[in-house]
Image (cartoon, one colour):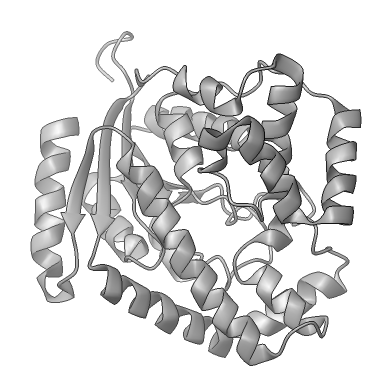
Length: 316
């Protein structure tokens, strides 16, 4: 940066799962001397490689990557953890004269970083949390989720009922403050502390869904079942945040004998399609995204040139 008062640059690449962010991010990084910061809530976990579609070791050797493999699967990684780690990485990357480049699909994490959201003002109530966890164990996740829908229907739209930790946190905020969690989000600043350039990748929905199903078939072939089994053998439990990720919870149900393998794969494909739909819904309410339609893969070079021109205009 030329001046102490100048905002640090931050490049961001978002899009639904399987849209092609990894390859695009590597080529963009090469052009603009970037270091990549993973914006994925699950890639922080060691040993969760296939199911989280991490960049390969070779790809990570080509471009420095951050916030990958920084915790064991028993750590309850949160949005505030992501913010703290990402801010530190941005500072260090900028000091090296490179451009920090957030790449991922976890909308809340990425938006909270881009606009410096605050999540800690409500405090905590450990007894209340334990009571809600017990309620979920006894009555099911959907009944817990129904409690959230009753007190904060707007907030519930942005949280999946399977994400018990976030459901309980939203209930906890309401319990402590008397105000819905979504009200906190509405009051967050939309002024970014960064010189921000956000690129969004999208494609025809039917083609995206086909890519998702092909990716899951490939994950099974690459050894996803053994990867999940290894996590269980190491003592990681299905109730942990890491084990609730797509691919892990479905395969755990198969390994525990609750469903067949065919059923587990069917549910994984269905749940991933639904997840992609929620990702797109989240991104649509974000500001200042430069959307690129990458449906026609044969036009990849043209898409890359289009992105290059946007970045040149916004950051250079």
